[in-house]
Figure 1 (cartoon, rainbow, N blue to C red):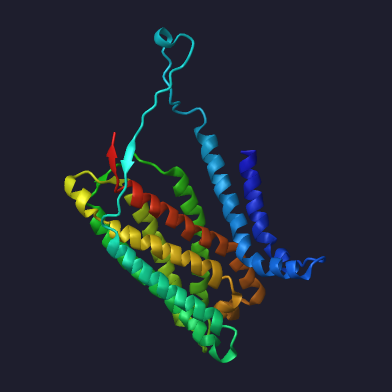
Figure 2 (figure 1 turned 90 degrees about the vertical axis):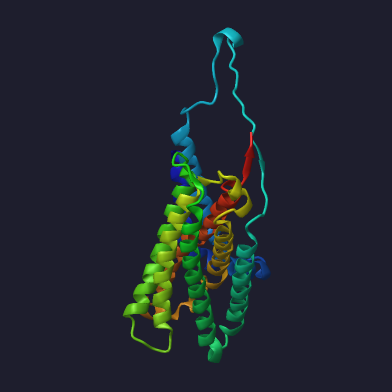
Length: 319
């Protein structure tokens, strides 16, 4: 538990001291000083993410130490020793039922990358800055909208799979719920700024709609993940059709796309003029630095969990 607390302190320290890292320069080599200051906004979230993962893993280890030991002690056959019960499980994974989801997901990824590149090209030009912001917000809103539709389709499709209520993914649940708090906070603050600030040239309505869609998408996606993690193919026709795998593939790529957007685009404070105008420069920067690392981690870990679902829920087990 001491190590868990240490990692949580490192997590909090990483969020609070990020501004010092950005403003710090290297006194010896000017090139290295600029590299450190330029890369710090993109690298510091990894400190937060690593500390959060380490704290969660250590907590799970502490909670399960000594519980359900996987060995059988047989005094007659083993004497004073212990015979470990081992069981091998061979698995075969294929890519059946993922082509359409992969194609649609890659289409979303390519379109988002184009918007991301255009954003970085146009955001520094005064006359085209507003166009860059509209592109960023529209791409974000579009991904949320299509993800929500895909999740509802996925709920219908995965009902054909067998549900195993005894399965638990405690570590994934903890990481998703904790990181979702940061994404909720970021989306709620954006929604408040978009709905209460005076209408100007900035896309107030678009910011508000994007924030609402983000909250809705995160909630239903977490429910979808919790449900699909506990399902498994059970019938011969499931081996051929893989119901719901197209949706899982699409959501996997969408979350990967959002991870890229949060990591590179949203890090720029200039990308949030509505929030800056409503909250002010310093308060919004602090809110951004506290919530965005968790939002980045949520998208990354959602991608990892969906990849595990893609593999485990649709694989054929040969024992």
